[in-house]
Length: 531
Image 1 (cartoon, rainbow, N blue to C red):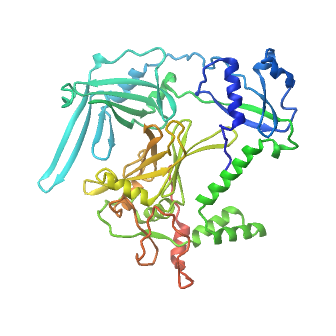
Image 2 (cartoon, rainbow, N blue to C red):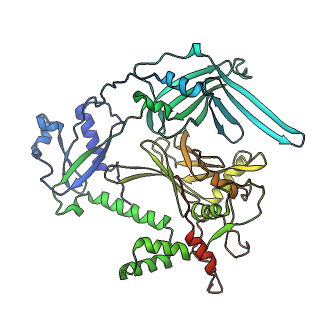
Image 3 (cartoon, rainbow, N blue to C red):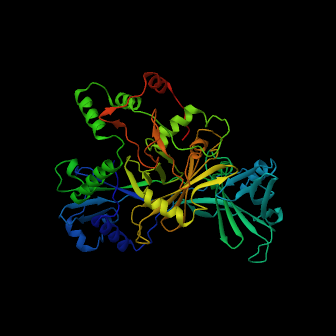
């Protein structure tokens, strides 16, 4: 895995040198990446070394800078030229954002829903915002609800010529906000509840609630993602460009030596550690693949397909606690695929909008990453799974953690992933609570949708919705852990799905193979996924 180390001593000194010379505020909305080369022809007209003592008082100072590593490696770096204002005025004569929402949402009386741990939030656009909870019993259904605000067209704010922006998931989204007031009286403040409904442009998402936050007592903020707002160019997310800083290593003999030695050692160590800790194949499978690849018998794709066909399957163990309705996502074939690919951690779920993307490998880790124009990936580890830590975390608040039951079904599994990378702001490890919910994602029974929030600095909440989790959830214990057992065996030793499943189950030195008929069925299964 290739990655960029943005903070090494040389690079840090480099940026301090630039900022001290230009005396400008560092703008983190402008993104840079550094590329190293041994080709001197790429750096045209490099300044002589003596210019460093002249405080860069000539024309070349804005374009070049010299740095030296602690190993006395000499670099000449060419700085990218960035226009003061790269954005051009938008020529747009269409309807305003408010008019778009009024025509497409308000008149059609559309509503958006978010099912949280206890409350269900309902935003009926242009009408009202409500939160409610239902308790079902023999006599019927008891519903508790509170109006969080009512729409008043007279209070709709006039639009600015340039929309204001809001920092959401590390991106500055232009937004359109509508205030809903005169809700149910608040017990704390004695005043009516108020909600700010914030609309942001997200392509191919139809009016979905991203988050609900109580910014102060009985004052709420609900962020709505909608592709309708994308029709207005001012509300489209501005495209981020990666600006290359090209550094020529004067001492390198070839491209392999162009990168600073300490940086190359860090990359090699990190890559080997990541492969060693998170590899899926066992030693036997790895040796077999190396031998077959060396002999040139089959290519990598064919070997991976054979490995999947020969690996024994896993099924849900333990006792099913609640029934689920018949649906495409609860079809035995889909459930088998979900168990053997997602719940074993074999396949990871990748999502996210904007600059950062998120990779969730069930029972293993959660990673935040960005891939630059060169295909290099910058990773931040948000947390790894530890069953002991997770169980202690659930015990602290069992009503809101682990397996969450609602309407005679388990609707959510709340699992903690800890021991992530150190956070510079807090000096502590990052951690992330993963909320896996039985919910329809983007109008598809097989799709996954995910979004990340940061309630506290470097403490995250990752929410993943999919109907594919509905059936496996009903087998979860109170800690939200799902037992997996090898196919055609009795569930004697407990195997948690949060622990990577082995590729082969052995007894008395004998390996249990799947029946040929089952293998044939498995090899013929093809499932379309919309990730």
